[in-house]
Amino acid sequence: MKKVFSLAILLLVNLCLFAQQADDYREAARQGDAKAQFNLGSCYYYGEGVEQDYEQAVNWLTKAANQGNADAQCLLGGCYYWGRGVTKDYEQAVFWYTKAANQEDAFAQLQLGWCYKKGEGVTQDYEQSVAWVTKAANQGDADAQCFLGGCYYNGNGVPQDYEQAVSWYSKAAEQDDDDAQFMLGLCLLYGDGTKLDAKQAVSWFTKAANQGNANAQYSLAICYQAGNGVKQDGEQAIVWAAKAAGQGFAEAQCFLGACYYYGDGVKQDYKQAVSWYTKAADQGNADAQYTLGLCYNNGDGVKQDYKQAVYWFTEAANQGYAHAQLVVGMCYHIGRGVKQDNKQAVSWYTKAADQGDADAQFRLSGCYFKGDGVKQDYKQAVYWLTEAANQGHIEALELLEELGER
Image (cartoon, rainbow, N blue to C red; front, side, top):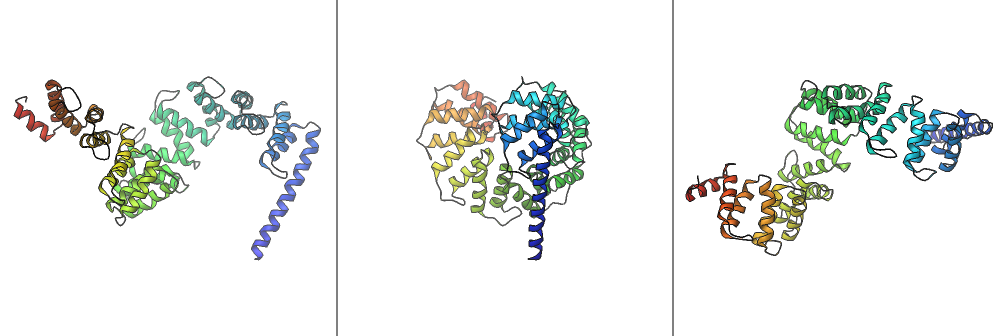
């Protein structure tokens, strides 16, 4: 009770100090002191010592910015960028960010980099983006260093250069930037721009994961499951996947679904599997959509429902998931969960076959042989049969031999 009372007293004292400070700034600001105008604008922006008021913040920040105060110019740029106290206006945001950036304000330089990358308030220009971000990165700004690492990693605005990416990611990672730590771990895991070192990768993933980085948490789960860079441990894989999944990370939710489905690192539980697959599927994860379709098709963890199965298979298929396209084709072919429609079956088989799915190629050849949903065409039938056989499809190989086409 004493501790709570002490904290309340301390909070009250701090509020009084902030209020007094705001009053002091106000007097100097009214006399035209640019720093005081910025400080007062900042108080209104963050609600320190005064009631938060973005319009008043913009008023005082503008006065300071017009006198050349770089901090005010940068924060005013943010007001226009986010539409706080003013109508959102990217061009005005860029105008003020540029003024601050030209005074070597690192945050403004970074923000300009984002604006040029996205084409917000300026014509999209990756090279200009890199130029401004480099200025901020050279001042030691961790966010800018991570951003620049990404530019070199992906080849945005500069030639792709994994070694440069690793260099910048390392600088930011040493400053505890969790995104940089994750990306550095990824580079080490795959040997991009650096010697492959799974143990070091796990070390950086762990640093980022402990800061709540969902990508890193999921990557750790994969490493623990496979025993890559760390002793294989299914239970630890579940722990880290659950952390990422709890943040809404779809891949981790799908991963957990698979763990519960197969009993990998956890007791097999189809209902839990369906629960996690559904969360990931609702976010558009094609793997989860396809597997959820299988659960409904087989009645695993849910009441068997062919219509729901087809729904989820189709969701995955519409994202180009080849095996889902095959299965949707099969559903139309036999009329399971949908009205039988051989033309639709051929359409879906073709999508999967074009992606190299051997089973789809084999089934499509059968459609051409029989004229199911398509005009009978022996040459096309043999063509698709050969495509499947070339991938080692046993039935296709046997049929080609029977036909004397091999």
